[in-house]
Amino acid sequence: MKKFILLALAMLSFVLVTSCSEADFDDEFEEVSAAVLPGQPVYADGTQMNNLVAKRVAKKVNFWGKKEIVDEFKQFNVPNADLDVLYNVRIAEIANPGVHKNVIFMTAGQKISSSGHQNGITGQFATWDSNCGNVQCTGVSLDGRSMAMKLKAQNWFPNAWFAVAPDNNFDYTMSSAKRSRLVQGFTKWLEKKITPDTENIVLAGSSRGGCLVVLMAQELRKKSEYNHINIYVSSYDSVCKSDEFGITSTKINNPVRPSGTFYGGWATNLNAQFPNRGNLHIYHISGGQEIVALTGIRTFSGYSGSTPPGTGSDIDWGWYKQTWVPWAHKEIGNPYTRPAEGDRPQAIADTIDAQLWWLQNQL
Image (tube, rainbow, N blue to C red):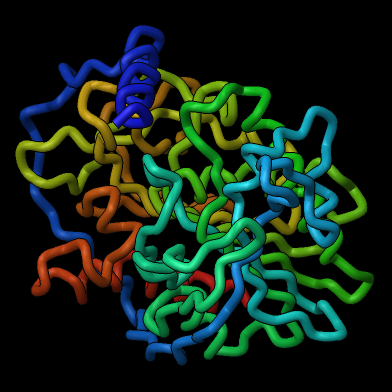
């Protein structure tokens, strides 16, 4: 209960500094269902993986709760690293071949409790953290319907080092300094997986996890030694803060939002966020539901030119693609269980299969 109260207070504080008026809801709304792209296939499910281990980045080492960073995650030990934050970061390695021709990392979004929840990108089930000790979580399974397992089954990226983070602890309410240190830690850790053989980096995430991978891509693109590596980012209704990603307080309305809703994304100049766009490929799926009422917490929307439009449209700039969908935030993050049963095939087509189709066409 205490955690919930603290979160509510933090979100109310956010309201005071963020313009989140919904007065810009326009009457010319036209209800449109998102259509599957012409020729887009329905991708077969992959094979469910069982008995994985999700390791904590920092573990407890004695009875009194002293923590230290695990050796294989030592890259997270950036200046002033917060061990209490890193204790709740849990990562499961799926594959580690001798040659890292490809590097793949996917992550779920944030939960209030920083605990278990189901996610359609990583494939974790809601009970993934039911067997977590002070060092690791055992018996983790990944759903074959997930993006992670479907992509693995396609084998478009052979010889891939592959990992998922069921909990990245990239908490929206944490201080800017703590969030910045997490981004730096994740990026430095991922860099250690890059070898002279690496040709592609594939990143995917939903909600706060989506923001994390976008920021990781931003950090990687600042380093000229990786210019030759393709970076592919699959963003699912990613939620960033203004001090992270240039988010403005101007809302671009979702053109296919459900009737009576105020879905939209905070206008963000993506060209300014990525001055180096060589070999960079981002696909952002945007719903734009306000995640917690009256907080203004929602996804972003890219725009070009000097003035954001009042109502958005689908974007394809070559390096950046954005598709608007009529789904709620949690439906985008988990289209297999969140939408009404009859809506799930369309939701899957508009999210996970759309991302796979985009990836396939990039190769």
